[in-house]
Image (cartoon, rainbow, N blue to C red; front, side, top):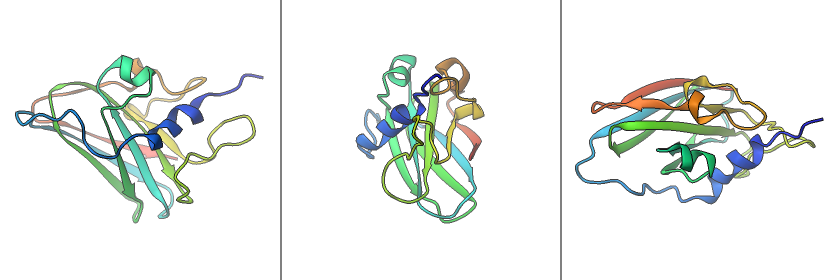
Length: 145
């Protein structure tokens, strides 16, 4: 039986600061992610990555923690340069601050990747989750279930 490694990867989101880092004054683009959630409890924790290296090493450019008080939860990352980005997120249903998993390490709380990329034996690969952000920004709607 293969052990899945999604939980430790996504759980690292919580260990990172929620404040924006690396933003520059001349950056104007924004990424807006709308999460279609199945429950109105807890919060959605989202991480934005700006490179394959950051994504694979779980070192996001920025993280956000957004209360889940409706069917749609919106995360907005502002002040970005045009380029290639990816998002990993999970819905912390019980508000305990971590991604809960079963005995083999598979998440029992909902999670999602940009482009609604499916997980493999671990997080969705950068090639499936990466998307382009132009000067006017980008928007996606992700189902987080």
